Image 1: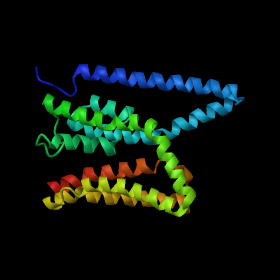
Image 2 (image 1 turned 90 degrees about the vertical axis):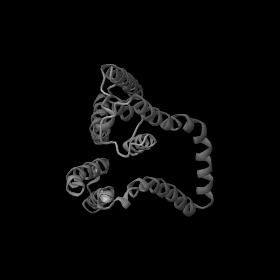
Image 3 (image 1 turned 60 degrees about the horizontal axis):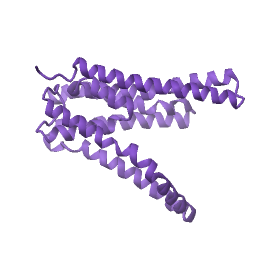
Length: 242
């Protein structure tokens, strides 16, 4: 029997996981609502808060959906659905999956993976790699925060420079993926062109927020830049890659 990333069993597992997440979300929503009532908040204010929060989740939900679409081409729907619906992000999941696939000689995640060994290796890398983000914060966050408070107390300017450096270091790690294949000719520059489009759209959103006072755009800027960049990639890839 040939292995399929879109098998019924994997769909059942995905549905169970997503159902658990939804039940958990409803549970905390109900508890938060009841706690709000105990604090004396009006029903109208609570409903308005719930509605506004639900609306603002549309933007990240679109980003998650795009991530599932991108990864589904190689990994099927169940695994990306689970990973990106629980504690995943496309900025991590795609490089992790690509790194695992590369170790098996697969250069690009362009075709559906039907080899169970490759698929399981990718699933393990994607899952185990993200576990430290769950385990380490409760253990290390108190010490890290205490250190940051001390640095800020001694020299606020140096504290801002330090935090900016950490952020730029993280961005630099992802930039390595963008320039990884530039030696392959014009085709290798496609990720860079997509990056430029994404950055340009984000810059436009920033100008609209600052100059036109479109504060509501702050919650949608990332999703909009991602969608524009992905749309650009869809059109430019066949033109350049042939």
